Image 1 (cartoon, helix red, strand yellow):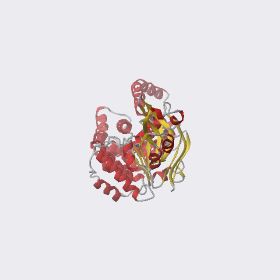
Image 2 (spheres, rainbow over the protein chains, first blue to last red):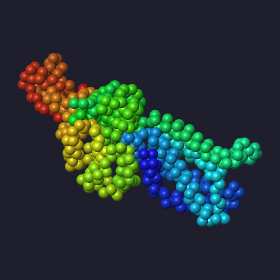
Image 3 (cartoon, each protein chain N blue to C red):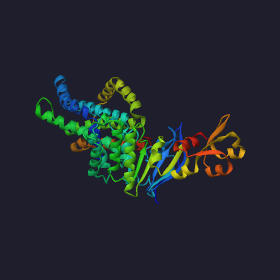
Image 4 (cartoon, each protein chain N blue to C red):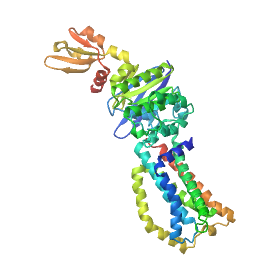
Length: 215
Length: 283
């Protein structure tokens, strides 16, 4: 049942799918050739995935808002809970697709584009789960129209706040490796676990918000 | 006859509009017309019954089971047709069906294809290119392909031409012919209900004004015309609405037999459902 709702989101975003597939190949290649990233494949993969996930998520939300299809779906045996869960699965599915495309790209252009390590993929998933863990409940709470302005505000202030955060992180020499006294494999897998926990908390919040909405 | 749907004391406050103590029931084997003017509360009532609008209080039971506790199971038995469709118009008919169909445990693909062929709807056509009538037929095909026991339709005939409306009435009668079924059909176009409805429920300003068998309503109500001299304080009480001119009067009564007994030289005509609806709403 959930998979059919995820399929629905992919069908709704099919118009952008080809462009996004090309983007998932092209963006990491372009970024790697233009900028010499010290952090390996993390930044090209993370930024291209964020871009693709946000655009696809937003295009689906816009169509949901336009056609109010969720009202029809909730009148069928699909539950509101299933609709919310499928939204998170959709975001995760895009992440997996982007990861596969990036890995194929790295294999094809070996030497130029670096493969992602477990910790890099984990960190990407963690940061993306924090971002979408906030975006999805906010959109369920305020609706598509209002949340669009909230997200625009945050995108606008990001260039001003981001350097400040980087500065604080660098000044205090913060890193996951230093913070956790565990073996490397545990440290590598920890971001995945944390991303899962954040995703589940966000999902629970979204389910609660959506269960009180009039459709 | 068994009760298919029973709504008791349904309340919902939406700020500018509220449903106030809405109670009614639908019987098996009956087409129930849910009538009222635009904004009377028909769509809000239907959406509240289906759990799309959350109720403040009251109970909703389908086949004797609480909707809140058995939502998924009960929705398997309900076919829905909304006026606005709520379809993703970017999708084709086949794609939209591929989303809806897996929701129902008793979906039958052959039944769906039979309806699509009968309505001459091409599966690869985009929903946005369908006419209002074709969209309604597609909604009906989706609503009837999982062996629903109750069909809930919100303003299905609104904006349709007479031919499609007539076809829709035939589909409803065909659906009822299977036995053990029920239809709940909201409309402000009462002429459609005149042909097929067994029971009528009138809602106005969020309140149920009346709930009665159509034939009983048409039998007990009358449009009375006569000279002014026939009116006095006692006979005026027999009318729901009364319009007086210098020469005579015209009014709607719900006590046709009392009018016959107490008023001489008056003409009593059979009212339409619209006359009755407007009579109660204007009261």
